[in-house]
Image (cartoon, rainbow, N blue to C red; front, side, top):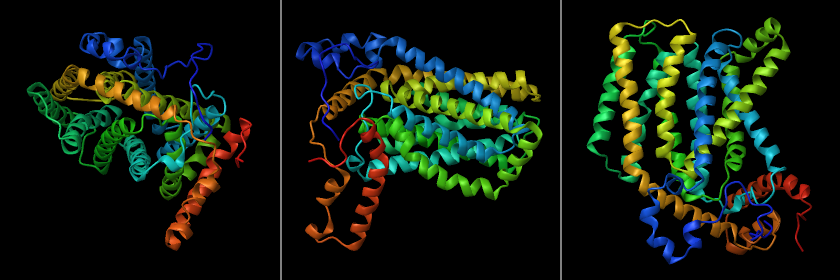
Length: 426
């Protein structure tokens, strides 16, 4: 990768500056750190209007997408897995196109050779988690109501809390534990009151989708802390091949392609193409915004958005769709919504200052990574230095290096030629 330096000139200042105000102020800034934590803008690590804009965009987009997907899967386009596949494919295509447009002051492509085994494991978990989370949710929407699906997905905070306890040995306050217990009780009461509730495989699919979504949230939080230099565009592009490899045969096995032909005959190719492009664009916005909310703020702030989203989707589902629920179920749903919001708020209060310090440290690591001046090096020369001939490696090592070179060339060549950078450096 060509050397990247930062300029003092403000003519091409990026939207989110890589400069850390605390680091720029030296030791005096560290002395004022505790005072600055009271400022929401400093706590978030980005300008307040950026954080608020991201939250609003994510909230509106995810509510609109949930309602539209339920209407779409119920009739016009009954292809749940194929929709998941096209959404991720369109998002990856948009991300790849944007990488050719953004200047290096805004976007710096990650070196694949710099990704270690843990990084690739996180990317693999995110790709498989997307397949389980989104595809199974869409299948469940074919058989049960949106309100019931959303209520079951309300178990997500429980899974996230359990994962945080296992992975990070995290301790919770009494309010957090109480809100989680009340949340589970409210969900159990609310689910039993839905008119379409019965022990069906769709209930299990919705539950697995919720668990997978929680695991994805935990993984994103771990990944952005470990590699703050990796852009969301790189994440979307790198996980797309795994998603495509899984969902293409899956969608064929459940008959999505036959349903697609029927939808084209009934609605027309223009309608189907418009839906695919529109949902793909929305999916790209959701992935980008959600990733950056976690990266620039924290997963705690992201959970607050999830609390309001949970209540909003439940409310709008009764407004737009014909759903029946008993009085006891409505009470349980209200308890679950209140507990979800209380849990999100308690998470925000308990961890705001801690995450602010972590964010500042992560941004400092990102700035140090970007400022590294490495000589331009080709994928061939970079991998050649590690060829097994010099280290006594096996044929398997040679195969792995060859695959890495091929992937690196395919991933980087168009970008380098577009920016008039030689592939093979002198």
